[in-house]
Length: 114
Image (cartoon, rainbow, N blue to C red; front, side, top):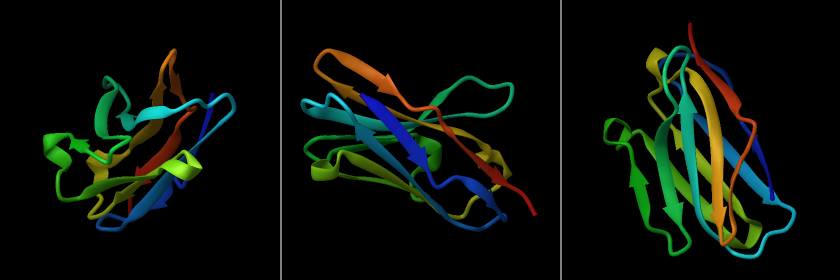
């Protein structure tokens, strides 16, 4: 399974971005998709996750600003981010889990700066 993340870039403080993660390849049934991020000098952390039934989980610090969604037919997950600030600057990684494996995308850079 390959994951292609897109939508990152440079955004001003207070701005918004939407990331996409498209899965392809030997997909059987993806049960779980998630977004993680890793800022310079910090450990990778969970941002948000969604399971096949649509149940969502967020990092407490990001609730209300970030929204995860998915399109099961397209095997794609989205992350809508709003009210971005400099602390959101990181590489954002997509993760997908199906029976037999956990897969990671290469990541997409999000930089929040004026």
